Image (tube, rainbow, N blue to C red; front, side, top):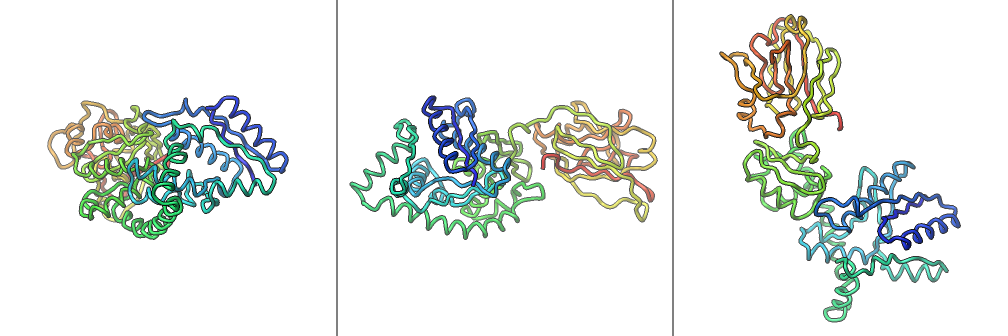
Length: 416
């Protein structure tokens, strides 16, 4: 075993005392210990409560420690009391059926399994066990601070329910949470398969399919969509995305803690807020190699290919969707230096099969590409002439012909 303790930096000398107590106890038992000291108050996000920030930072540090020691899992000390408090808290604040399942016994956070082996025991039972074994323990004084909602649920609401409604209120709520958790586990396998049919190759919701679902199924799909993407999962965000289905293309909603949902022409995507609009970029295209575009989280592969016949394979695509590919004229490509760069206002291209040129801005508009996604789209330039826009057809005179061509493929991504 390996122990980890998180010093939240909130209770001054008392928190220092707790860390010292854990260190002494681990020393007596011969258990290695890691202590992480954090500033929860300083890391609070906009609109985030101190409790929410504490939980987020705490699990981040636990997962980090687990990775550093290559642990198989993280075990926490949550009890049945925590389950009951969580169910009541979720119910009053607003939740769906999943919120009534309380605390899951096993969950993956940052790729690390987090297990809660003590959910079947009451807090008082554990204290009695420690007392019987002759062990001492510490109670976090913030757990009795009435300023925190959970503490008032624990100290006031649950005892009132046991006195005035049903002495078995606590046990009944815990049993309900267990039943719902089992049903949710069964439903999850069904919804996982349903979600696969509702998402495209980039992991975005396909609007035409989601719109056709019954409302209950749509909600379930959105819940799993948020969960697998790692975005904040709560009832309000589920409803925000459900509403977004019926909004116009380009609409964006903030989901909190660094995430937003984007309504595209025929999809909904979840993106970290930091990806809203990349910085301008410009790179020489590496032929028979790959060109990374970290600003847009894209990778461009280019290679000479020999194909049967005189015409390239048919390529279908849409501006702003990846992978995007094109086959270009070998002779023209060999006599120039190709550059891949971001779009600039005023850019124009002479599309193959058309007279005259078109503004890239108009092409983006025709494809209903949101404004903050436009700079992400790679533009291929040769000696000042735009020869291709990812997802669009090549410029006039640059189409691949003959047996040998330059094949270019743009795909996400560097960070995946």
